[in-house]
Image 1 (cartoon, rainbow, N blue to C red):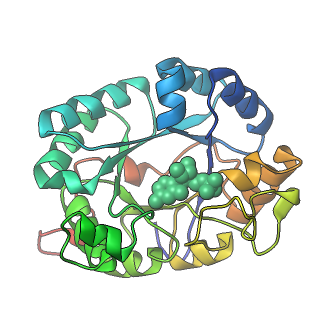
Image 2 (cartoon, helix red, strand yellow):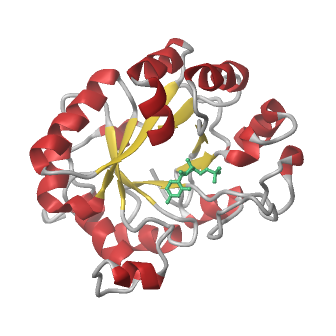
Length: 268
Ligand code: C5P
């Protein structure tokens, strides 16, 4: 994929507490959204059957569990996620080269793209330092991102403010997934738009800015979930992203274990 001509998909963050609420949203939004992100809250509450129920609706699943453990456990976790048939699984780059390589090995039997999280966007420079990190967060993002791609991860989760630099550093190969997407105004009367008092996203960008910076998948949650009309908000974001109706996925990000050319150590 050429970063200059992004072909992005919209991922809707199913940040709801129960199976019934999740599947109700999938049924309503599936004309406009084909990729649903299941995070820790929903997966712990509802378990793998929520993944199967989303897939039964003809949609794809992005399992956002931010796996971070010893290498064998990461390998088994990635293999289990692959067996569920999910398209994406998040892992922490802080697990290091061995843990990431083990996860890549676990994913390799399946059409599963591993996405590495580098520095959680909830960290400030001070909180990053408080856990013993000597580098500034931006330097850690660059270091951990390169490490994750070299270990064979298919992409990274980046804040909208990081995505352009990460794309410049790592080239067109990695799949860059960007949360923190907000429109300048309140789309669909969302109660959690960029100006909303209940919105904790501070590192935000509009869909077009994130795409221009090189993002491949945009994650949108509250601006759709909390809109007065979630279906029309989803349609709106899908139109902006340009990929909401796609049923397939770009195969290149599925090649877990294949280092992207941008960081390949092989001669050209
Ligand atoms: O509601 P909102 O659009 O902010 O949803 C963003 C989603 O992306 C949430 O599920 C959130 O947990 C996730 N996320 C994030 N920032 C990261 C990684 C994941 O906001 N760095």
